[in-house]
Length: 294
Image (cartoon, rainbow, N blue to C red; front, side, top):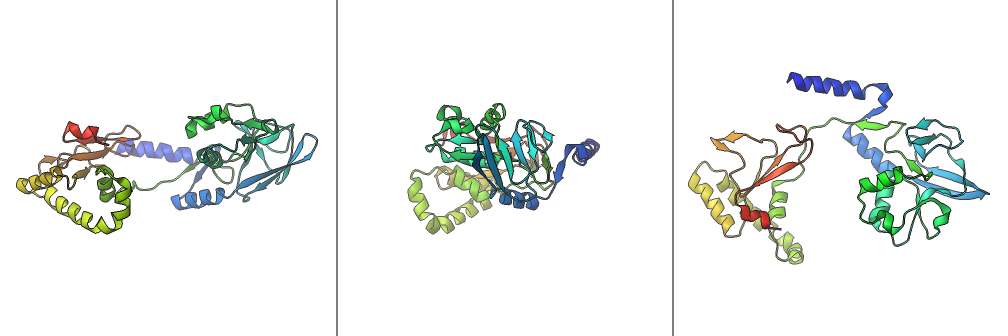
């Protein structure tokens, strides 16, 4: 416990240090901010020779950045320059935005919008500080895409992730596992005809829940014979008994190790759990044949 208190004290000392510019907020406040930020946009129009008028359609809380420095009122901010004026004049031969082709996938637009970058759909590569053609975005994850843009030399605009000039955010909340027992059940159940199942899901939901309830009542019984009944039902293909052990790695219940009551069990090893790998978890199986199921 003393080690946990020391770690917590160090974390709180870090996030409350003004030099780190951390936004301390509730999850609700972060949700509301990202909902608002998702409506922001740039409007860039040519206003003269090598000159563009940039309109920032955003709230006063937004931090507008230009990758790399240029001559304007503002201050340096890591690899960016903070733009204080709204609207403002950008002087350069090309638009301070990312151009993408019309056939670019929706995922690319979604990622650029999430990162806050100014982008336009166009075939005129010469008009933009950066143009992403297919070979530059194909197969890239969101993280790889961001790294590629950050390491480029193009002067592109973006809305920063957090409001009021904060460089990062901190929020404390309880550990919530949002996957229910029924989610586990439907995920593990092998469906031979997914579309047919979707069509009949509403009609069969009550029936399936009753089956799951019957299995659970058997699987968690103190009577070994009753527990075997649950496994027998699973073997017949009616249900798969799944044990949620997310919070109890290594625990014992009724002189039995958790994780062996069902056909499979799920454990978490993220940072707040008994054994931590920072992120992730593991899945244990009663029979190795189950590992081949899809």
